[in-house]
Length: 440
Image (cartoon, rainbow, N blue to C red):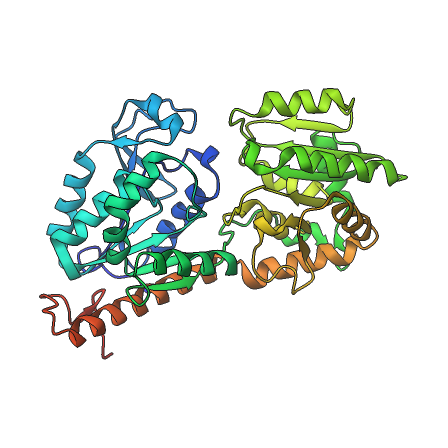
């Protein structure tokens, strides 16, 4: 556990974000930011400032909210219909509140954001300009580095991106591809050497399934049967699953295509579970299934959150083939934790999995995917054990807290050294490392 201290002595860890828990439909970033807040709660005074929209674009009525012990203060998002186009007009009151918190804090403050464009990074930039070296600005990439066409993005980047990138002290990435992408992105804005880029793999902080459900040969058959009976899943079927937003970029259609090709070869009964929140694409998925007369072999399930770990466990293999790079593949990590091996495309890569034999990461091709599915079915018990072992070894939430705090500490030290090398005055709190003397 991180060493706690009194609330008066603890430095401030401040998150600012467009959306927050319980808007789980926004996927991995929402869950991870809440986990980071919880993990930092023992060493920092934690505050979260967020917009007031749910993932269905309705308003969350509570101005103050408690999410698993984390205090969330919500601010009005004006013209919520624009949020459907990823334009979040969050009230300037959020920035005023953040500035007030920083002004009252006696320590250096960590400001952590998970957006690359929009008002949130601009608010963070203004805090950095106002409070200078008292702010350690952290940005989590969360798959947002990829360029998409649009005049709004180009205009925003031309005006603000260089200033924002130069203000960031620590950039967090989730896999090797995103690490390299952030290096390229930073280089484009002349920011290499100004703030570090670090690898912080995805993690699962919860304890989704107890060890009693696993034996020396993988998942216990009686536990799988019990859950399949609970959800009306045939006990004798080979069950594959996808979990995520039902969106064109998630590659759901090509997942279905690969599954149906595999089903033609399999002598066993097969079933594909497509689990997620409709993001405007479910109608096309439904039509695709009907056109292929596959309604009995493919089930689309909506509005699953707390039960998702049971679906991971009762499934044999997790599939994920997004068509764009999707670094926040939290569902893959959660599947591994439940002993379910993964087959994902290169766009959904997560570290350690292929090297440790808990899954496959491949360039999407239907024949290659089908061949891998066949190989996995022939080796399920061993793959289940490897999936569980790799999840515990590399993606355990308790280790993520230490890693995150270590990255914060190193970024603070590097920032102070960099400022001293340039002869900058670091301010009253420069001799402190989040309330602890650097020399200790």
